[in-house]
Image (cartoon, rainbow, N blue to C red; front, side, top):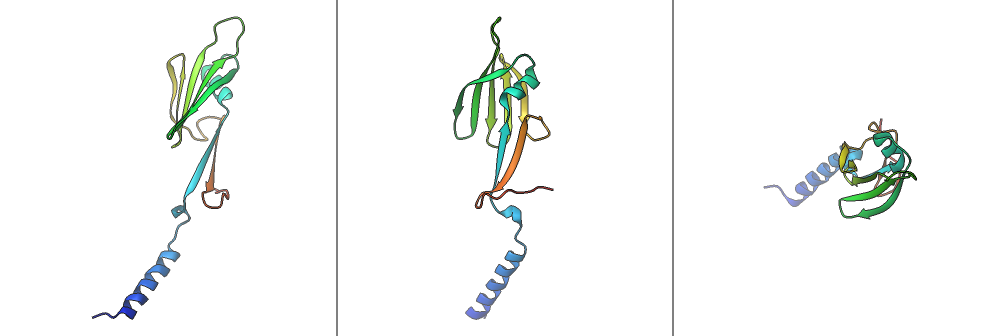
Length: 126
């Protein structure tokens, strides 16, 4: 029968192995997405400049209502929904122009940054 000292020594050894095999990805990481909404809409829909009219946030996403800046005609309206998991949906006049994952390669108007949740230090991806 194994005595308590042997069990404690075995447990200590396992904890040391866990520390050695600890990956930096085991730590919580925050992804911050910065999007130039008017610029992105101009890129997707063309036309004139766009302005943000309102925003609404809930637990899973943030939605923005935008309208085109025009003086001589009825301005187009758009809705951009950015989900916290990196997914985005863009509708202009009820027509879907974008429905997918928002990554740095998707648009020049989007930039993703990663940070350690505990320290706030930036994470550099290779």
